[in-house]
Length: 108
Image 1 (tube, rainbow, N blue to C red):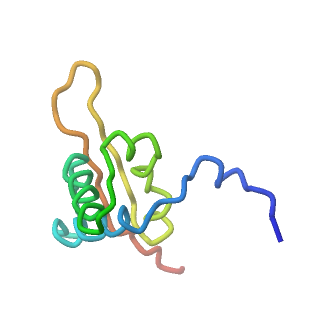
Image 2: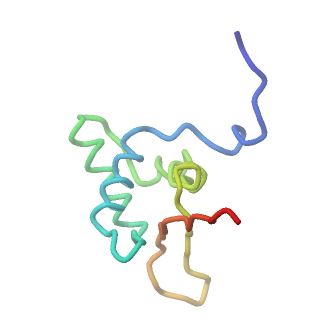
């Protein structure tokens, strides 16, 4: 049975497992003191490497065009506070994601 699309599904493309695998690997690799920082270029290179290992062709542009780096909602639902920071026109640092463990709210 076909169901109506929800507003959340309109802007949330299906994220391939290769993308999740790349983020998971880099979160584990970079996790220190309750958080992980991942450079955007680092995760793109890891995604491309995983696709190549599976003998599938992929480009940086295809990743951007498909919206596959829009993973915030997935990781937020999994218990992370996710941030994304990219450069403004007058800045020169690399764009990056931050993943921090959500703090538990203790019941009163």
